[in-house]
Image (cartoon, rainbow over the protein chains, first blue to last red):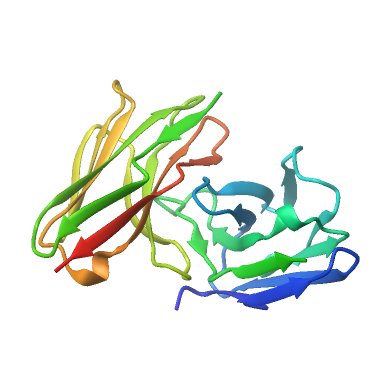
Length: 116
Length: 109
């Protein structure tokens, strides 16, 4: 039990579909992250919401759109994806700023996405 | 560019000791993390080093040399449940985590 939940755990979608991934953290953290994890590759940071400010990775295609309605919830909206977008999408949270010695990130179990 | 290198896969025997190395070149340094990730599960935090030296936590220890851009994770008294991927990550000058591709550790009886 990591305190970070993600739904759905598995998702299969066609290239013309629109879907959303949901992440919720129950740790009272003030920063949330979306990562893409592909086999044998480093974790790729996609988006960060930190202290209510979005920090965006410029290399993320516009077919991925994040939404952070409050400090506990994070969404990743998907539309017109490509087969190469198939991967494990991980959400994480952390407590930024004073009071946390490590500011380590706590991860959810991920959503395994397959794009047909 | 920024780069984290660690071996792709290692094999060790139950009860033995294994050392997983990580070398890094990053824009600035604000700490190094090790995470464990079992297949199909979330990465979980193992250790954090920001000063040179060895940090010990039970069967696991992590070492850092900032001048050499080098760290290792040492696992003692290996158990079958230690079979997992071990991820090295460095926090850079922008406080973003730069990740290695992970080392898959296989434990044999």
